[in-house]
Length: 455
Ligand SMILES: Cc1cc2nc3c(=O)[nH]c(=O)nc-3n(C[C@H](O)[C@H](O)[C@H](O)COP(=O)(O)OP(=O)(O)OC[C@H]3O[C@@H](n4cnc5c(N)ncnc54)[C@H](O)[C@@H]3O)c2cc1C
Image 1 (cartoon, rainbow, N blue to C red):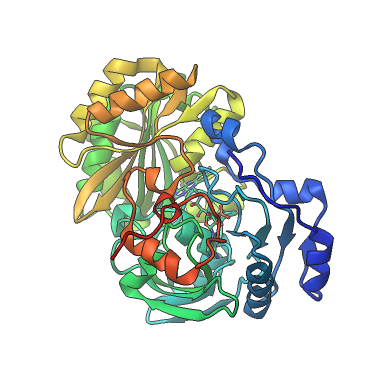
Image 2 (cartoon, helix red, strand yellow):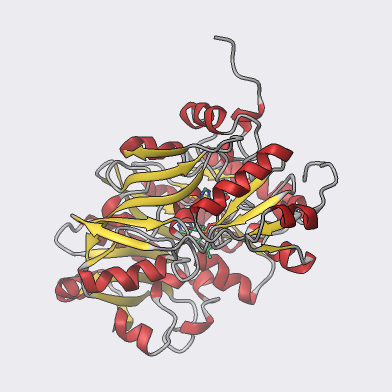
């Protein structure tokens, strides 16, 4: 599915950049042209050949401006990159050219009134380590906190641990500002504020290079990392739903994993009984007693319970690294035949839908749920594993989910296929403004491939 491209002299291009660090070694360039696309057997087939011609590693924003000037002058495509942990081939250069590794733009600049100003390449884990002693932590982070960057999270992600309190990144209030470079012969610096940031949020770096971000933070709490067990998955799902709705219980993460999927959690082997369904939580220390009282009332037991700091100090795998797409990763470490679905359950009656899907698919699609807040209500994201057989069978499972009112990402690298199936007109208009030659991560935004509609 990669696009044909004219020949490109990477060595000459690097020389013209006048000392900006570059990598042309084919093995290293290939490594930096990958993300976690291979979770999907469909994308694996389509994207295996996607490879850049060169990786450029700007040291600061002035370097980024220089790289953009050269790319636009020579009409070379450019794909921004943070930690490279995205799914769906978001960070994979379909048309070759430059992969722009932004990880050196990692300055953690200031926190004012709970708003962090930070370089786009800062690692999420570094942000937490630096900000916690100041009394602040991220409102939400993906389960790839150890390796992902804040720029990659904003440009490629949606939400994660913390979304049970603050909704998703696109909801008003968390993304406060972004500094964005345009892909023009003479790049402009745009400062986006408030809702404007959504133009570049979850746009896969197709419509601007983010160099800095302003993010609203949350006050820190002492978090207790819980792994709990239930013999019945639906009893666990009802418990998670109850905890999610219990406004007096301070929490950061509510996740439910069916026993078939939890059987792949090798690092928890000693804590779990075979076949147990597993709940994963981060609960504020002040809420531990009422949480455990609710757990007993729902028939669950505690399998592991430690302060998060203790988990880190003892080098244990934290509970959040079994949630979101880490559940798939844990399974893939054991069974290469696994893939997953990323789905959004209907707003109302989602537990009934979950029970129906389990009844229909059983062990072929082991269930995994993440609970979040959406528009002031508790909502449920399904990331079930799939024991993959063929692409037509995968499509049939997706169609059956959709028939139950579940929106599913259908294993596509196209932005518009990501659950919503719609082009965001603001993002397309923004792309036309900031990337007039269509050089930023080309081939990912369907709406921008078509000519502009007549006025
Ligand atoms: C095991 C696993 C678990 C995951 N869990 C979650 C989760 O809980 N929640 C979630 O939302 N996602 C999740 N993801 C997806 C991904 O890890 C996150 O979205 C992550 O934040 C991406 O950050 P990154 O730095 O690795 O970005 P990359 O993968 O490097 O980039 C992601 C996208 O952003 C673009 N980009 C990167 N930096 C910039 C920039 N400075 N300017 C413009 N565009 C840029 C890239 O071109 C690409 O399209 C998961 C993925 C895996 C493999």
